[in-house]
Length: 196
Image 1 (cartoon, rainbow, N blue to C red):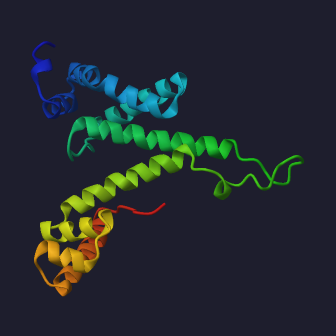
Image 2: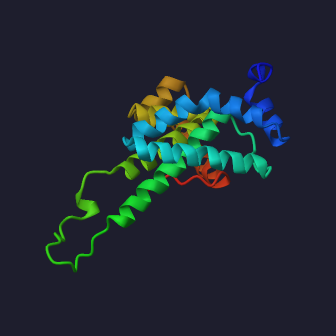
Image 3: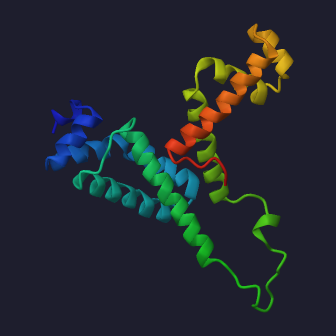
């Protein structure tokens, strides 16, 4: 077991896929605190956090054992994404179970979602969209990313952008147009929804 602790996550996943159960024990010890803290921070209920934590690792085990685990970034990020999706499922289920018919006596029909402040599900989805958007922006070519950041994050006019980047206004406009087209393409290629 001591030898296993020196292996990378990737090597441990491969070892576990080849029936070395101790390799998964090392992965669990390595990542359990971070994943559990993330879940508990969002759901704010220890019993629910325990259930989602267990389900996260069950899904991880099943995915690895079925040979469906594909390495896209860090293993810890993959685990957190599984937990994140399970948290969203939990809140969706809670919403369905707590739905009240407007036909019931004593129900306030003005108690509607669109009249309320955002809920945790909206916050999670919004956070995910922000993360996806940030990754897409970072994937743009430098010149396109620069114009997009100046326009949307710094509220600069195209004249100001042209002066700051030493290009014509038409070039700045063209870069913005290509940035938006590329963002749409990247989102579509990766099946990323950028709206709730």
